[in-house]
Amino acid sequence: MKIKGEEEEDLSKSMEGLQVDKSLSSANFKRKPVIIIVVGMAGIGKTTFLNRLVYHTQVSNLRGYVVNLDPAVMTLPFGANIDIRDTVRYKEVMKQYNLGPNGGILTSLNLFATTFNDVISIIEGRADQLDYVLVDTPGQIEIFTWSASGSIITEAFASTFPTVITYVVDTPRSASPATFMCNMLYACSILYKTRLPLVLAFNKTDVAQHQFALEMRPRIASHRIATP
Image (cartoon, rainbow, N blue to C red; front, side, top):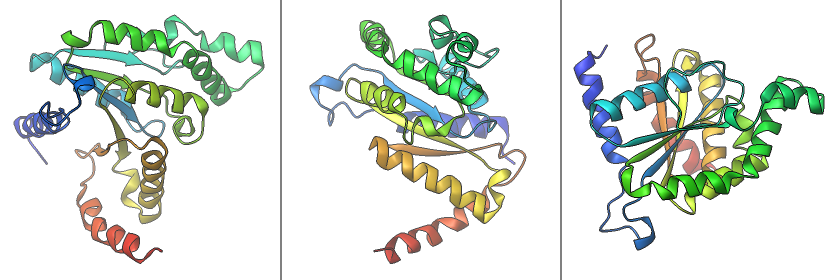
């Protein structure tokens, strides 16, 4: 198990790795923040993970900006600069369209996506003052695999800012090979759908070791080579 100092060092290196090399980037991306969209299944700790990123930006004197896209979350452990709940009332959407919880979340995102240009404009207006924009998302993974709102949001970000997808994996639940491969398939689906850089983040490694995931990598690579 890693001690806190080692965890902070690993996180710092990971964040540095997401920075754009300005000598290689286009003029359009210079002096613009990196967008980090945190996605994953429900209940795996996306919001807790993002809270840690927010804390890291604060203690490292990095200029962060937080966007919450989860309309059903009750409370957030961090302050959100842009919050979907200020625009779309999740429970009212459920009542108006006679939807269940999942349908309400998807419809809320669809409604919010119609005005997402306003979000981009707000961030553009502060771009030279920011290093990172951290985006929290709902646990409905289908938003980023087939929903129109997921495509609109990711394309809007990627067309304006350097953008990275962080796919959070629940390490204890992924100890089963079947569950692990399901997670990898979802991650690949999002990778090829968005065509954006994707980082796998294995969460809750203080509860379960992630060594099995490292051992699975050669097998996944062999499968890719063998697949026509």
